[in-house]
Length: 370
Image (cartoon, rainbow, N blue to C red):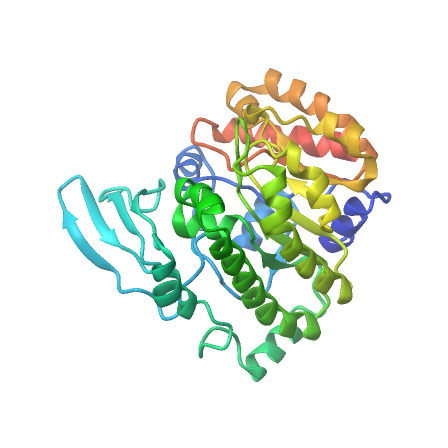
């Protein structure tokens, strides 16, 4: 019987496995609440969650660099200030400097509305944002003793260890919004170059001590830069602004023996895959089916050059056993070939019942073992 770590590495390298690596469950808070009402135990931590669902485990370095919505963590943070409130909603400035509107009775269950982003101009970047994104700010990283203790704690791990490596489009977009960034690519390209270079320097300076202390099994890059109609910038723009910095990060990872580099971006990213491969990325997730992604076709196109993760249409889980069986049959060739980590194509929404999710996992385990 393989450990989760052995299973992940073998799956990612197209080697024989006892079964495919199964990621822990992704589910929205509303979904967890529904499942608890339908019989799932409440209050499971990350290891108990994996044990309960009989999935594998993942672990990461204990360094947080962004909030739940992908905005880089500011240090020092902005002061959280309530601007106005009603019985229904609250308008406030959060710790990243953004102005948000959120339902008062539902603060953790859905994304807020962005009324204004943290950055609206070059002046904001230079005076408010850039000074808060410095690697040498006290409190930004673990000290020597803390780093050594953490490194010792993961030395004999039985799960794959990831390092959160970078974001090139995703972070600037989170700071200023899609519309403003789209204009800035034309109106102030020098600022976009400066931002991405600074954010890359920031990340490299923070992760290098970790890479020196412990061997990581894979790296993770977050972009979230596509919709149903395709990427939010053109391949030519990605090549000009983002690709050179991506290559810097993947070269650093390769230097320290990290050769499995997975990139996360929702939506349909097909036009960018050749650029990511050129930049040193080796895998992509989550292949949202509703956005027109087809992991089976992508495997035929790129073969063993690309690890595929995700691609199970979450809408099939909401429809029930027959749809689930058909969905897993569609993906079985990828499972059999290896280099594929089967998982839902994003977090499970609350229209998926607990019995349906459990049925999906049971059938998935059977397909993986065969």
